[in-house]
Length: 467
Image (cartoon, rainbow, N blue to C red; front, side, top):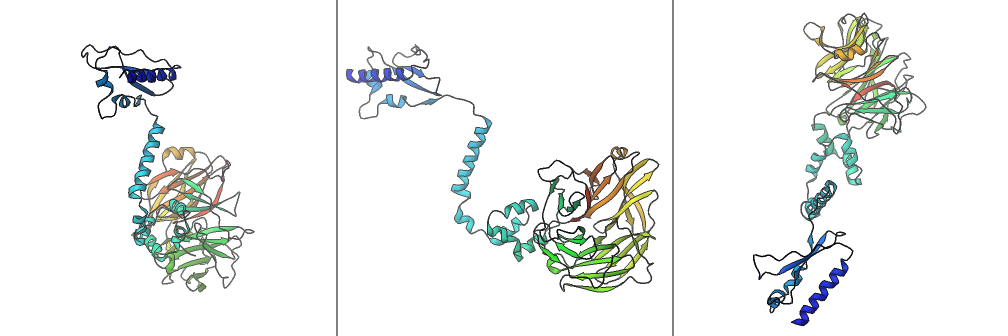
């Protein structure tokens, strides 16, 4: 037994030498409550967050053999040599890292079983993916080839078609760079910069109309039409028109059904009353003709006002006489409505919200200028004011010569450009919530210079629309 006590004292001495650089605290005084209980020596090294608890052995202890050894069992002293960690506060970063590691481990071991997920139904997978935000969906496509080819699936296209239309985006071009588009996403309030490689580079191409996620372009010479999906780069150049029109034309676009797979039609109309309709299913220009004689010619169209579509009917703004000109893509019938504009109205444009026709314009009286919203009353065929820009914003226009330009309108959302020599402001108006929102300035990627928007059109972003 004396040899064992000598070995134990030697072990304690070696530990004290190892911890010589620290400041070990003095041994705790023996407890007065129990004389038979062994005392302990606490060895501590401040360089480490550990401490060792060793029994304080006395030469005269009569219970040494009971404290140190037990017959046929592991010595209790080695259990006492186990390290005891100092309690210390972990940082938030360490806590999050530990939590994330635990979640990943749990997912790999349980929920993310590969054999289980391989049996996940494809139709349910497509139904879930079709509900992703458009921007997230295109990030999702970059994972693998299978997911990238998902948008070409007919079943996935059907899932996307059955969903309600998303918040429209706005395809615009700028004065500084007319050969590339700048797309504004109101949901994230961000500008995106898609590239359509098939569009001609040597001529200026303007966005004129849209339907079902496709945008119709016309070159500045009014000769060639193009249809493209800005998101997927799907592209089609329309065949040459049957006759040339060198004057300005108004362009409208509608779908034959619920999606582009059912086909679409493009209409252009000139000031002299000539018009043509393009049918995507037949890939030809059809219904060549002139506006009926009951409609006054020449047709003085308001080219600052983009045509709006409700179902299969297109509406154009007239300046003389003031009113609206409509064309039904299915029946091929033209109609004219004489509707006087509100007084003191300068720049104005048509808009739509569901089945309602709206009028957006600058109301200028004396030196005060404000943007107002009117709705067409179907019974009286008169414009009724329903909303106007907040007065705080209108005061900023006081005494300034403001010009307004509509950059697109779809799904009750309108993008307006308000410019003067001193300012260039973009705003959106939601006809459902009657909410006015300022749009952040458009800048090129990794650039600081703010771009001036020249024109644009609204479109519903669709990953499955094919030109």
